[in-house]
Length: 234
Image (cartoon, rainbow, N blue to C red; front, side):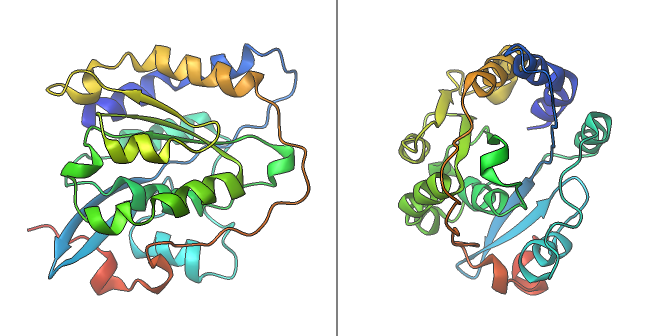
């Protein structure tokens, strides 16, 4: 994932340029990321998350245990976002659907006033990661959550039946990496981001009645504590 972080930092402007291609005059963009690593201990998953301003249990508490979940998430400063990406290190296995679910619990703005977009980048198929049964059991719930929150999902990763299944969600797109050896290093990320930006730019904000509440923490994140939620390196 290291080359992917570097490419994303360099080419984030392609996504912004794609958005601007739609000709809209006013922009109020907000960015954040969720980097994760995962493992298994005593038959259960252990996870570590890092966002732009929060990490580990600080992030979990901020999302699920704080009275003010808005605090510390998202930035309008592209430079701050790219600097945060520059500090990421790639190591550990992945549990992509746990990360996706946690990302969906970020404090989004009202869906009737903005586009909500998640770009999931991974070089590991769900089937070769950790916590597989736990994650595949939540596929239908994740699809329903994407619909309820009106989130547009772009997934870039290896061929995976689980990824294909979750991208059955409305407005979701799945770009399959053809080169199993080089992973995301083979992806022309700048072009991919530009296409994503254009896709968002031409889509309409869903001016529908107020959204329903979506279930938070499908994997029990709200009850995590330091012994269970922190990934311990050997």
